[in-house]
Length: 202
Image 1: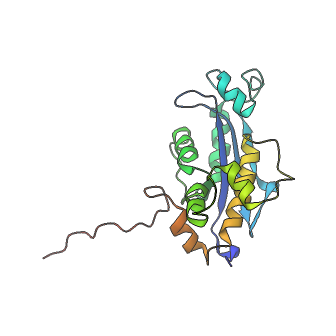
Image 2: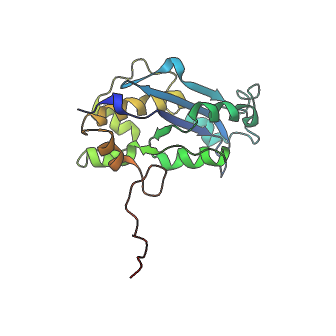
C-alpha cells in the first residue's frame, strides 16, 4: 500500500486549447493531491481569452467558443497565478507530454520538480487491460466521478478524473519511488533513468 504522506507536493493538471498549432490556452486546471485525496478547495482553474479564435473542431471537443471566452482575461494576466500555484511542485497529467509541453511554452521560466504520466503508468499497471485512453481507464477501474465538475473534455473534469485514476493505480505500488520509476517519461523532469558514467582518469 502506497503511503501517500510521503508524496511530494503534486498537482494534477489539464489544459484545453483553441485548436491552433501550437495551441493557445483557453482553460487550465490544477488540482492538488493532499494526503491521498484530491483537494478541490485549493485547486486552480482559469478560463482564458485566446489571442486567436477557437477552431470549430476544438469547440466541439471542449464546448468553449471564442464568444464564451471573450470576457475572460488574457494569458499574460493569468500566467503569474498559474506559475505561483504550480511553483516547483510535481505535476501529473494523462499523456503528460502534451500538457507539460503546452504549459512550458506558456511559462518559459517554470520547471516542475517532476512529471507523472498516468498514460505511461496505466500501460505498466494494466498491461492486459483495454485501450489506455482516459475514457477506457475510467470504465476499466470503475472510479466514481459522480462529483466531478463540468463534463468530459473540460479541464476541471479531466483533472479530477486523472487524479482519481492516479490514486487508484498508486495502490499497486509499494511507495512513491516505485511509482515514480514507472510513471515519469524518459527525458522529462523527475526522470531517474541512468546516464552513462563520465569518463574516468584511465
